[in-house]
Image (tube, rainbow, N blue to C red; front, side, top):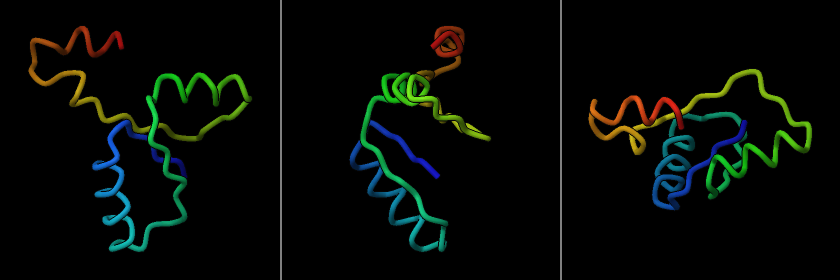
Length: 70
């Protein structure tokens, strides 16, 4: 399992939550997800499931169309 966020605070909170919930082994990466996904793609890495959390892209409904393009 791979978790990526550009925020160290968000990753710390996620690590704490994962520990409390006995989550499986997770590889944590503080990175821009777009650049990391390109690197993973170029390295031939594949995933069965990708979960994206876009609130930062669409803080209001007025931003939804632009967020969808991102």
